[in-house]
Amino acid sequence: MTREILVLGAGMIGTCTALELSLRGHAVTLVDRRPPGQETSFGNAGVIQREAVEPYAFPRDARSLLSAALGRGLEVHYHPRALLAALPQLWRYWRHSAPARHHAIARDYAALIAHATTEHARYIALAGADGLVRRDGLRLVFRTPRALDEAVRDAERVQREHGVRFVAMDADALAAAEPDFRTRLAGAVHWLPSWSVDDPGELVERYAQAFLQRGGRFVQADATAARPTAYGWALETDQGRLEGAQAVVALGPWSDRFVRALGYRLPLFVKRGYHRHYCGGGRVTMPTLDAERGYVLAPQRRGLRLTTGAEIAGIDAPLTPRQLTGAEAQARGLLELGEAVESEPWVGSRPCSADMKPVIGPAPRHPGLWFNFAHGHQGFTLGPASARLLADLMTGEPPFIDAAPFSARRFGG
Image 1 (tube, rainbow, N blue to C red):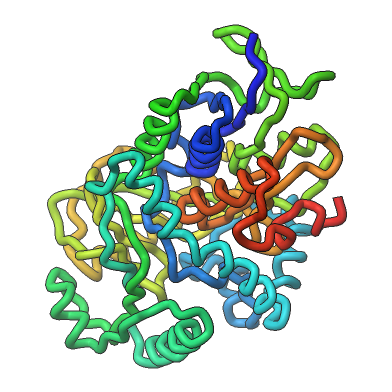
Image 2: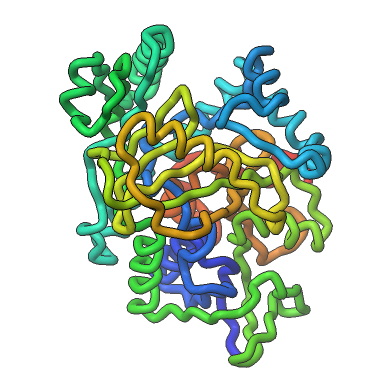
């Protein structure tokens, strides 16, 4: 029987938390039902989005809302039952997306994401993972001049307010940069400081290996079965009983179920997403968002990965890959896509909060319990920075940024 810190969940967030705490001299056991990096962290576009200083806002114009409601576009799809269940959270999400509120939220969010690449760089060096990383940016391509002009104006504002560098590309520059495109587009916004990786799951695995090499322990078990005890937290596993004086909830989209069982009612919901790989066709030189169609193409080890927008659906609901089918059709018009590698697409869930900010800090009513979840689209990006902030709080060190905006107490819990 051991007494230590239990980190529940071995995605990017949990693995980074375990690594950071072990670097600070703590005995840590990382627990998950699957090996590190094999759930939500496995399936994203693999981009460390330093440019994403403003979280994704809920559309507020009538045209976008009608398009989503009628299922006309590829950005959003929903299951009616899941949509009804999430309505209270989505209503709060819509309210927080009002310009003044969103501006204030983005100010807090930007303070954390400003450290995304520098904190990843520290872990990449520890893990010997530099060979997985490309530092050539993220490109948003646009099909119409009007959309491109709006995007460039917005990028200029972001660069002015947050110092995130970009290059605007016209049609000729984009055609020269992406010779496999067979459709002439209006141009692109190329965000320079963002990074990408060839295999998102493997980067998490490398971080986990660095954790194990520093004396950490991984136990494969159902982390959601952890329960409070008189002395901390305990979990029965095939390898015996685990006990920890403290525990960290880093269960991604499963975090809400876990904390609800403890009496917390946080405004959380999930967005599902799909991906599939394609080989034998054209390529893109860097991760590329087809901004007016709502999908991403990313060059990865398994092939060209196509990822979709958001689907409001239950975590365990049957697959409805309508967005993937539509995105594939759009991508085949853009370049020779090649053949699908997998017979069935991958699907995973993103853990989201109604105010678009992650929940990082102590559980309000359970001493020794800590939260690190609800990172939305940016869990892969924010893993190391979030781990550093939480570790500062857990060890009593001055937080490297203001931690109050990410506290669960902001919801009144």
